[in-house]
Image (cartoon, rainbow, N blue to C red):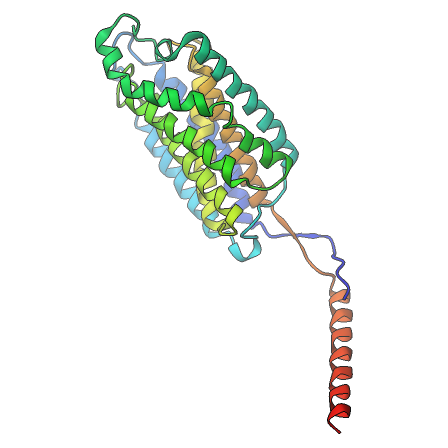
Length: 316
């Protein structure tokens, strides 16, 4: 049987491609809006000034979710494999994975040199018994994170090298992400309704869901349509929250620079998710040449005829 194939044929729809472009644009808009809003943060106060247009963030979130939903509905999941993902942009993914390794190593060294209680949003933590007691749960999350920090980026490296999803290392990365969510939640050094805190918690929750849906492909249980939706939300929220965090820390909007590596990790995970989203929106599959299909069918037909003649001869 002839098994050669013709050139790749695109399976990504116009809507999914448009969704990718719009989500990328909205991510930059969301990052700019979040940076501007956080510039209205009042020093030594856990509130924002009245002129901070915080309502723009949920509006942007709903728009991003709507575009992600439209893109998801345009995906024909039967055109995608349930055990592997499209490989477009795999070289870019490898570069991003190496950057994640560097970021996680910086987080590990930073923890060893400064400890958990020197990392926060700038509130006076040292020699503050009340804060130390309240941060006890956050410290436990830090301890879990520090054990997993050198291991967490291995998952992304393997995805860039082997082009396959590794369930074991993916699970360890997922645990790191979950510990980071809890650490953000129990960190009392920032206002509980702070947009910068909420944006990172929401983005990291989507990152956990993203890794979970990606690991499903390792068990041949992947669903390209649902994965597209989760991937779109993760890419947009992680990218915008991470970029806003990096820029705000550099220009002095955020009082502490210890959070920069965490924002960098969020930004790189967002870029990784955007590469996955791109590979889905602009995916291609191999299709057999029509002439070769016809030739193959003729050969199969002649073989069936010969088998039928042989069986009649044996019966007689």
